[in-house]
Length: 362
Ligand code: ADP
Image (cartoon, rainbow, N blue to C red):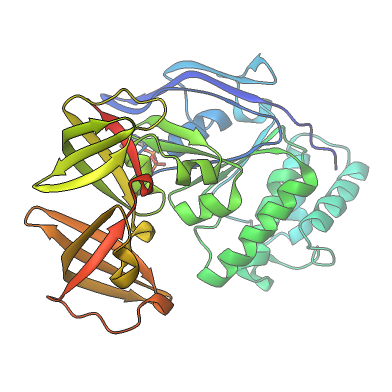
């Protein structure tokens, strides 16, 4: 199967439903063969964006270009894009092969070619030999693969997946994650998929577009977004982060001393940010915080009261009260917790200035 690899460009794409602006002037150039995830909380405009690209939703403003051709107002079948929905809705009575053949029949492909194409795509999604079964004779994961095969069979320019793993249970989801990634590597198509699950986005995609309130707030590779969020929303949405907002007390070269509700904390100036005059905000990842003995040698080290702790398998999340108005959350691997933590006790917590990432300065 030879999927034609194309690039996709969104220019000020906007969707309004009455007075609601669901997608607000989104612009981005998606590189050919990229595997991009649109990630964000429910209601932030991800699905509307995907549906506009597929042509299942009209565009209020802006334009969508596929291979430099304006497809903004073409009907879905004329765009050369394939969309797979969360509820992948296979036809129950036709066989697996007939289900997969459906888009080809719709497009008037000659009968002789259909069988070959169906056979080829079934091999790609590892369904060889299942063609004569009915969908209900397959497992959930296999049904998902049929839906994927049906989306891929007409060699789309662009594959659009809306919460592709949403209907699967946890084990199958893990399995399908690996399959989707391998499939992308094999066929090299440009893929866009929507999810609200950050872990899915981090493990599957090579680019993530983080959406909030109808806009892309940051776009980048998973590790870049995790290590270098430029927006407080991104810092908190991808991974877990504390936000520390402080008044500037002192500037010394690249070091900045801030006062966070009465506690003085050392941070650093970040490349690309102005030297702050009055306030500076930082994110601090939960896992960057050391506790106990090892905390003492950090640039920022405090005695803090344990307010709450939540055990979750391999790690424990501990909420510390730094001062009456500030709590700090830490996530500590189980093997580093040498003894049981008790609510109300005071423990040393610490982190270095470089563990905090500046996200705003004024
Ligand atoms: P997401 O996929 O991120 O959950 P959506 O794109 O589905 O977000 O929705 C974005 C916003 O648009 C939400 O406020 C939602 O309520 C609204 N919306 C979505 N579809 C419609 C519709 N058909 N009519 C009116 N409002 C809609």
